[in-house]
Image (cartoon, rainbow, N blue to C red; front, side):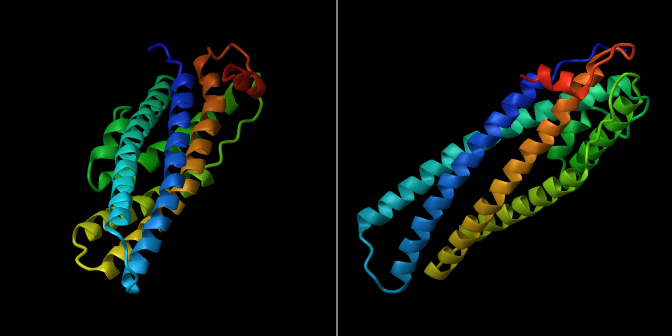
Length: 231
């Protein structure tokens, strides 16, 4: 059996980056609101100066670039944490449903990425709870998968709406469509905030108990001891 690998630093980094992305999304909400006000003024026949329109476009473009960079970086570190967690579980579980490589690869396969990452996360929670609870000297561990279901539902809704807005904005030909796309983008940014928070919870909940898998079965460690390892 291969040696298990520590995963707490990856969890901490992923959480920090998710919070950064959430902060950018909050700023983007404000930016969308200002853009919506600008578009509605123009739609109502109120004159909008060239400088106002230029400043709005520049702000939106800069925020989009910053968000894209932060989002990709956070996604990379989340997947690194996710794959390491599934790798470690593979070292102590007798049989799992998928190879550990799927914890990374499944995100990039069309159609499969709609359900396989959720299946792996759910198995990660369930199998870890079973394994740790069987260890002598440890208290009963509970990893509620209900949060995993909420996390995945918000993820799917957020991404489907994001793809819709991306395609719609490229085809927008009039001010009405631009107003609609801005409203939808504002809505998606609002959804992204609880998604970020529950993603952090999913990582933290698992990271609190994962150190228990890193010990030989004859060693004893309580949940409070595991939490101390994260400090």
